[in-house]
Amino acid sequence: MAERKYRTVMLIDDNEIDNLINQKMIEAAAITENIYTHTGAKSAIEFLRNMEQLDVAEKVLPDVIFLDIDMPLMDGFQFLDEFEKLSDTTKNKCKIVMLTSSINPQDFNRSKKYDNVKLYLNKPLSHDSIQQLNI
Image (cartoon, rainbow, N blue to C red; front, side, top):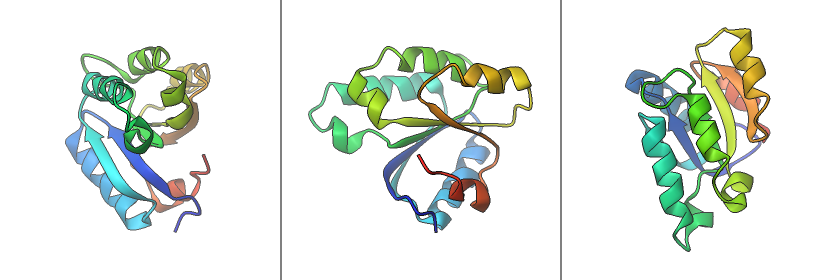
């Protein structure tokens, strides 16, 4: 069991099978009560914007966002650019983990330019990678 317990985590990946596998790994590790799943970065950023408008944002916003890089319409880096425009409350609450199959070193280096990206992991999540979550 991971040392850290999160109220809510969010998975953003256009591949539904990857989302399912990662969701099952998170559930098995028992690190959260709630898992939001989005198959697109656009819907995820809209969800976060909508939550900012509500008084319950602190209770509803995810503590950790697992973000894929390679997605249609809006990729992970475009999501990060939009995320930067959100409120400080949201940016302080939501820690981002890049969860990708990309082995491109440029993606890894580019992700370091974003303060909210705390970790860069390869898909799929594993028991060991979940144990590394200390954010």
